[in-house]
Structures are given as C-alpha cells and as structure tokens.
Length: 215
Image (cartoon, rainbow, N blue to C red):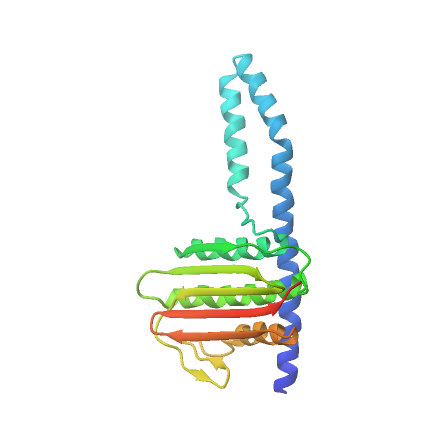
C-alpha cells in the first residue's frame, strides 16, 4: 500500500510539474512578445505626443504598465526550464516577504529532463519556502547552481525554525503528514542519474545540496 501511494503521488507530482513548466513557458513567451512589440509601442506613443494627444498617451502608458506588472522578470541562468521554475518559486517566496538571492549558470541540453529538473529544484525550493514560514528572524533563501566538469552542482541555504528531527530519511514538520516527501522525490531522481544529495537541519537554518551528471 505504501509503495502504491508513493507511485501515485510521484505520478501526480510529475504531471503538476509538467503543467507548471508549460504555464511559465507561456509567461516567458509573453515577455518575448512584449519585447518584439516594444518598437510599435514607441511609435504609437511618439505619434500621439506629436499630435498633442497627451491624455491619450498617458492612458496608453498606464495600460502597458498594468500589463507588464502581471509578468515577472525571469531569472536568466542559460537554461529556459530552470529559469521558469526558479522564477515561479522566487515570486512565491518574495510574496511571503522572504529575500531570495540566486547565482546560477546552467546550459541547455542537460541529461535531466525538464520534468525531472522541475521536480528536483521545485521540491527543494518548496521545502525552503515552507521552512522560512517557521523562521522567527530573517527569512531568506540563497541558491547557487553551476556546472562542475560534467556535473550539475546545486546548493541552497535557507532560514528555518527549530532544528528538524529525522524519521528514517524524512524530516519531521509541524505540519506532519508527508512533509519531507518532496526531498525524498528529489533525492530519488538524483540517485537514479548516479548523483547524490545531502540535507542538513540546524537551529534556524536548513541546507540542501546535490551533485548529478548533467552533460
């Protein structure tokens, strides 16, 4: 029964991650569309200003500003799929007053699929966001990603509440239930590709780290 539950949740999570990537890729394409249309917007505004249509020009600018406010600037790592998942999670963290710093340079064409990359990084960031909710002081997430040789290296430090104890390979949480399942899913995918993961909980901080063949 436990194995069936795990498979069911893993399948659901993979489907959700795939849907999430498609949604954020849509945002990325929308932003590219705005860039393409920028010249046309300038020409329209120039024409309105030259004919003295000041009020109309201001209304036009307000409309553009309103649309752009609904499109978050994507993180640019060199990998579109990674940009998508990082941007979405960072926006979520910042909405909860958590400061986020990211230093990442990752190419396209990884051995990990887009869905696998989304599950791994998405789960680790979800865990970090949840941990920050429990923090009593500064709420922060610091992410570093790069290619070392032919390996993808990831490390993250985030604030948290009290030191979490482990039950087997999962960390306990005030929420109980399946908290820690996301970490296990991330770890299982990394290990399937011949990599390793390391998680550590201390008072006020949590660290996540993995190294996996990438190219």
